[in-house]
Length: 473
Image (cartoon, rainbow, N blue to C red; front, side, top):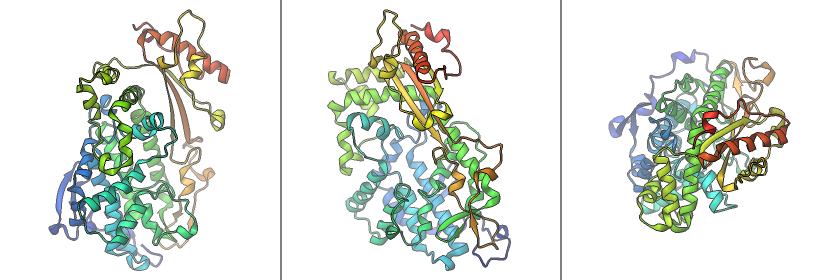
């Protein structure tokens, strides 16, 4: 796979998974419904067989999405095993074809595998809701993120269970977990074999095995088709300079990955009813926080591992009067008495640069004088940003390609040379408004329309709020 290679790579590719299964007789295995048999090496098992890692079984990968897509009940546990497996296969593939050239050894492969296994060990409940929507309301100004908690959890697991792991390996594992957050580090902070840091969490261009796993796993769980073939990229990728590059003829496959991810965000992760339920759960958690001290768990990994999705059941079954408001909200979800979706609009493309998040206050200030006063606490607003990982920019412009395996030149593909069938804009901002009380849907919907007229001079929503929704009481 290196520059000196003059053979057809397709003839050199070993059978799927063979390279990473050289010692399978010494490994335990589990059957995964996405990747088939996953073989677990002894060091990985030491991490897996801990209460801190097993906690991931009680964190649904897609949070509350299963309330709309019933099959979406898979957990962070199987996702982490999947990323572990793909990380090992990716590193082993590079070792097979460029190991001598790049100095890749089994130590590197093991390091990447452990990083894939533990990348989500610090994740909070309910997918990203915990850190993006709950914590900002109860711990304003907090810059807490699950990647940093993963580092603390890794150290805690090693210390608590006396796991023998090379200190250098442990250091690199932790660096790989936060690689997507630290890609812009100064040159003096550049790591040895930096291309290895692109495998699990790629801050350079967003192509990593974390996405490979969750895109296919989530599509399958939700009953959606997935025509993105990540193995095509894994089997033909090549390191040039200090980064993983891809064949130029595969640029549409890469674009399909980003487009599939964006489609999942639009139709699954941020589905209007999923967001309604999330807004209710956030309100329930905020109301319960003073009593249950939920936000206090984020400071100490010895306590944090006890926090998972079952916090909802704790609230729901508690007889404490202090949790009554939270309990009532959970009961409303169970009985499908949800916050009512009023309407939504996509922010006009020419207004994206100066967009300011819409708040309940904005909607309340736009209501008509109807004699019925709507309060801010009656309104919920969701501002949803969906992009292809690079904001308004085409992610392909951050990726280096090569023509073929005889070529030593890497290059980017300018936007104007990409198919004109692809989108000219790479970012959406969707503003959605909900009524917490069914009887206020009409008033809030009209206030939302007035807000659009005041802000843009037009009603940016696609269609009026249906009359049957307005009449619901």
